[in-house]
Length: 155
Image 1: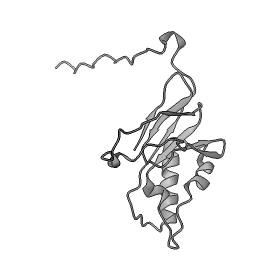
Image 2 (image 1 turned 180 degrees about the vertical axis):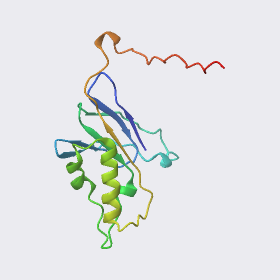
Image 3 (image 1 turned 90 degrees about the horizontal axis):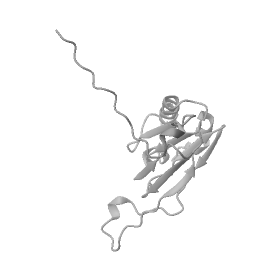
Image 4 (image 1 turned 120 degrees about the horizontal axis):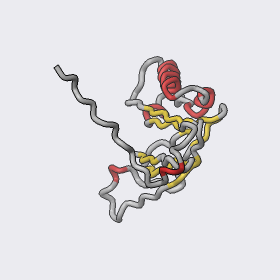
């Protein structure tokens, strides 16, 4: 499991990692792996003695950058020769794509690598940090406002 918080007012992503593959940060044709320095044990190992140790780690996440999260079914997918899918090597070429395009490209490339045969479930999420932030006068305690409920048309 990985838990993420992307605050509105700071250009970072805060993470708690429990045995999950590290997210990739795509920007300017490059890929940076956001590997946790202090990962916790996977959630299923919670029966081990002692309290779980969850530490929040922060990584820069600037406007325009794209965060790619994926399961081990992606990173451990193999071709006919047993070669793992080279996600980090290929993802840099997708840094200028939008999130949906990245996911489409990943799916196409992954299936080509494995000849359409995945040995495990594979999932991915792509998030682009948009430029701009809520106005400063909203402050860090700003709350989302609900739009007024729509009324059904009167007959």
